Length: 441
Image (cartoon, rainbow, N blue to C red; front, side, top):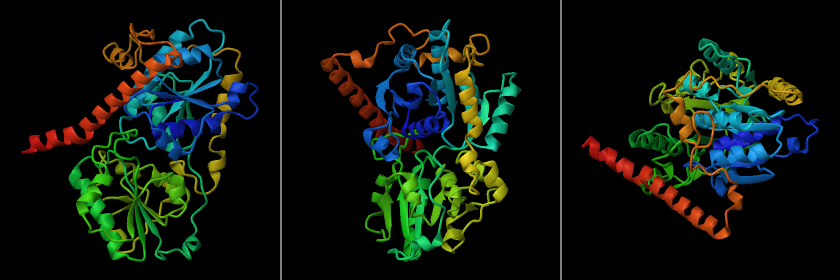
């Protein structure tokens, strides 16, 4: 399994566990080898530990190194849990590496959560995988429409659900005996939504004001990463730093929190967010869930995805005691399956994977984007990950196993890489905001 961020590692690893049939004969089918694609969002040890999904082996690689590694090993299934451009590059690289091979692995890809932007762009970059997973009936219908709309096959689209839903159903009696009898309100923040200081400070202040107005409640701001860490999206304005601007004007029942989202939801009585996938995790458990409208219902925020959900609400309404009631039909179409159907949500995908893995021969990987269909778009996408338009490694792109590098060279290279990442993060979190503010003068 190849992933390029903490959230995609979580989705990919859990997907692999759910989709590989237990009766597959190959030892590799029961083993999860993890690869982390080297880049700005490569997860840290802390982030991987927080996700809580472990692999039998784990190493960091470039795209070319990954293709070389899986070409040498005999895998049954490969899960590409990556941004769309990276998926496309791996598909072309693998297609080239497997030319003439008698057998090849089944290649699976998909999305880590709510698909609310770049639908066509992201989907067409994923076309060519044997299985493109859709996390709900709603997504499956949209995915097939996109593929058939460009004249490409939609046979790869398979409906399932988000692999990380689970946990005990919500029970109001569980809060009995807690330090805060009014329950726990969790504001699940996002790295890039909203994307400006004023809006983020507004949401932070409203969470603080909610805590002040309800001293019997505990209010947690669930953070995604620590300063300097990156997730799937860049976080230029971490809430940890913004809360310092509030000074001592913070009540005792308000605090910041890290941790696995599933464990946080175990003690949550109201989940509040702008558009985080955490809302679907919360709805799956039947926890009261609010998708904020304070900043508008806009595509740029992603909360437009929740139109018709019954979950849209403002902080004013929540302050007044409102608890949103989700629409059952909407919840069903989103694959949340709070009614217990979740246990069978992966049956169709599991059967498809088993069928493909048992086939005597699989056709070559055939992405929609080729030098014929997208000559002005494809080369740049592939070059970013070290490949030529025909899938060959670009000159200078290392195809060797990084583990074979000498100890001294590895230390030097890792040191330089960390320094480069630090410089990049400094630019994103410190320099870029200053430049923007100067431009607004």
